[in-house]
Amino acid sequence: MSNTDRYSSPLSERYASKEMQYIFSQDKKFSTWRRLWIALAETEMELGLSQDGKPVITQDMIDEMKQHIEDINYDVAVAREKEVRHDVMSHVYAYGKQCPKAAGIIHLGATSCYVGDNTDIIIMRDALLLIRKKLVNVIAELAAFADKYKAQPTLAFTHFQPAQPTTVGKRATLWLNEFVMDLEDLDYVLSTLKLLGSKGTTGTQASFLELFNGDNETIDKIDPTIAKKMGFESCYPVSGQTYSRKVDTRVCNILAGIAASAHKMSNDIRLLQHLKEVEEPFEKSQIGSSAMAYKRNPMRSERIASLSRYVMIDALNPAITSATQWFERTLDDSANKRLSIAEGFLATDGVLDLCLNVVDGLVVYDKVITKRLMSELPFMATENIMMDAVKLGGNRQELHEKIRTLSMEAGKNVKVEGKENNLLELIAADDEFPMGLEELEATMEPARYVGRSPRQVEVYLRDVITPILDANKDILGVKAEINV
Image (cartoon, rainbow, N blue to C red; front, side, top):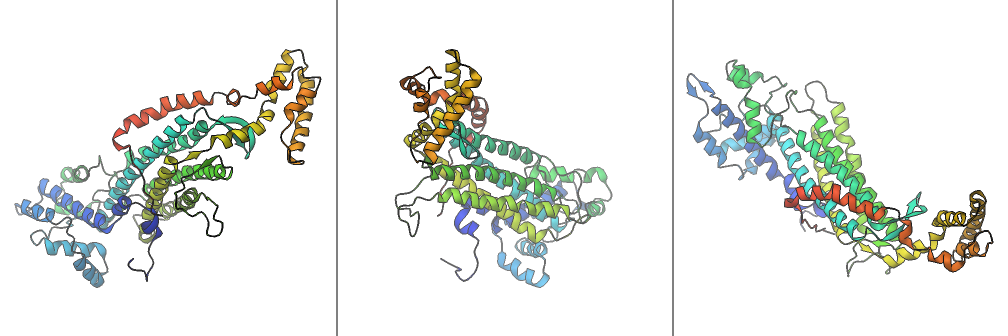
């Protein structure tokens, strides 16, 4: 352990993966700044930036800059920032110390947001791609689970009260489909993400009018060229000094949506674990409680819910920031943005790793499920019993009232007396129902009461999930390791 005398973020120490931590690392940030400075300088050189007929930027300057993308001289930048109190200019200075030939042209025509905002977009794109990979793998694991248990009857619940049976697999498709909606939203936002480009101090590109002597046609090529060099289709067509903070809102809303889906699933798993029907993975040496040695608490599902709530609330940060920006820009977004964007992604990454871990190891106790279902099934079967009695000559309205009365009596026997459900015995003993106990018990086959659940699962997996997984074969197979 190191730095035990100061705060360290649980997101990096306990929850987020190394991959996501790298995306929001200093190395990633400042090496991206340098790539952006190279892209700007290359673009200016390629577009013929000159002074008195001589090129302002030469290839040997570019080559020198490319040699020092990763070996960032942090000590120089940190010392310089203590003097000038400006992070971008400190890194311009530090980069120039490593690149003496290019020192005078680094950051030429740009403002701080050229590196700051474009890097934020690049980092969010890369982070979304990692989130997408893990989300697709959660979908794949849930699909396999749904397929395996598509025909396993289980008691369904409305208002957490026993309701008409469904199947374990069908319930899993409800979780699955919410993640699919998240994937659709993520793909849309990812497809519309653009770079800021180089727009200048208030978004007018005035500095480039000066550099290129008012040549608008040449200046029009700057943003598209930079975008292509940085792996984007285009830049936002208009902006102030910064890209619109609504972009951050859209991105964090994706994270909040994933968190909501994960929270819903984890809540259901926690409730099912209480019922002893489904259980999250529990390792051989894992301790469930410091006091009650027998306990197997749903710790991972609880952590999913806990982190998900953080992500959902965190989405308010960029929304409020977006709403309160003044004119072409203010700086009250900066400190908030450093926290909310990074931590929203780190927490969501942790949530998805937990989801992968939990779904991959879910345990289904089919005998417990069947026992609980059979204790409630007579109530669920009353409609079928009544219809069979009508076919044998009974009066539907009279039978409905009779079966309602008998159901209340059986319910009292269960809840007040603490005895078994005796509804079938009560019906068999009533002369208005022309069927015996053995005949009634023969109808208590759970599969008869799950409707089209198995078929719905098959069709859903075939028509919706399989095309998604086929289109993403190259990113399947992710297995998550959780730290604690």
